[in-house]
Length: 280
Image (tube, rainbow, N blue to C red):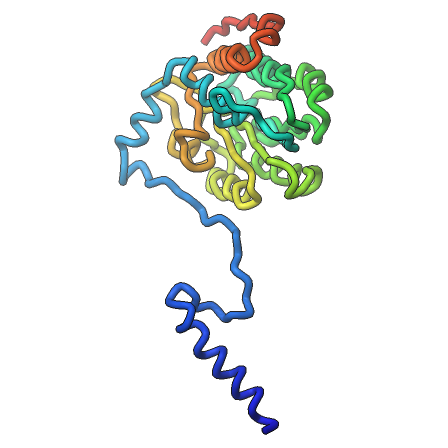
């Protein structure tokens, strides 16, 4: 009789997977993991038409503004938001191809985005700028403080070290976010292919997504934009929700203003809507 219990347990371990079906072949004492699997889009060589459309078809600004309202603000037509915490990291491309003038338009776009005090949302913001390296502009601070700090962020110029900016965003979430209680967002504004340790760019974006971060990419550039495949794979899936196309950084400022006009007309009236006209 003393051997009955071990033999019964062994039999249960053998029989249980077959009882549960082919999808339950893991040992029964192991818990399933909820870690999301990487979702990679096909390479350009496999689906060039998909990337041609992303590269060349820049939607009207009002359409992109509606995507901001629906996917970033998460406001459906006639809907209301529930109270929630949000931890947001702004990741700004400060490379030479952006230029100081357009970098200024990007800062104003992000500042105007923060001017909208979303009902029922307790939001904190951090900011990272990348060029040849990266710079932590500020850690998570309340929305009202972030608006003031963005104004003081300086343009660095240099190369496009996107992977370093994404890595520092991950560090911000690991050390300063409010954990599983908060919705986590990255707003990445960039105008092209990374060129410093580029093999790490998409993997670093995946690390953010594995942590449950929603990665929105504002892809800046006309029909000759480079690196659209990289930018599409940085963004969360599907790109129709998480990748926004604009021809210039100033175009994203227009998009933000239109989004706020839709959800908060009174706030829109007092926004600084001046767009700098940048040469080049």
